[in-house]
Length: 175
Image (cartoon, rainbow, N blue to C red; front, side, top):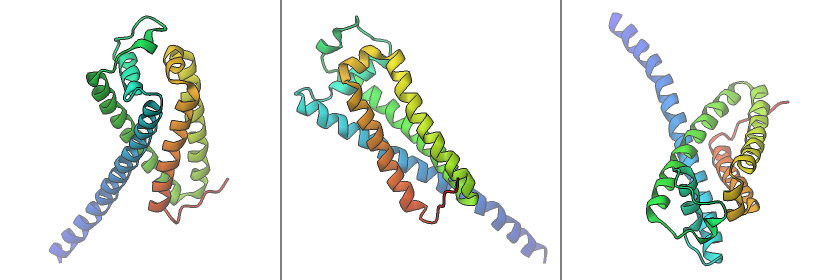
């Protein structure tokens, strides 16, 4: 009888651990989907402007403190070091955002009222990102054009949202 109780206790402990691992895996995949969506969008935009990999070069240069004189982003040569460093940080950031989103959606599945809060948090997050970028990264946004950045964020949100929708078909949102 004692062995049966231990097996039952082990099964109870491993079930939440499996759920947590599934959530983190789901968040990681969603984050990678979002990061790839943004990267592909800007690759297309850069190729159409005749400067492949220009966007990650500019963002990497701005992020890693190798900023040039204001206005000189236009003449910045493509740097594979900046592209790779920025792409790595970009992917990790999106993976973290996906992990948080996955946890929030798991909570929303248990309580539909939380779902509206998650949706509202997403809208505030998008607005906050856009305003912060406009205030603190104006030279970068001038070089990249803020509509392209906004479209990239909306595409990433749609791609991640589509993935989460497939993973959480029973999710209900109640205001």
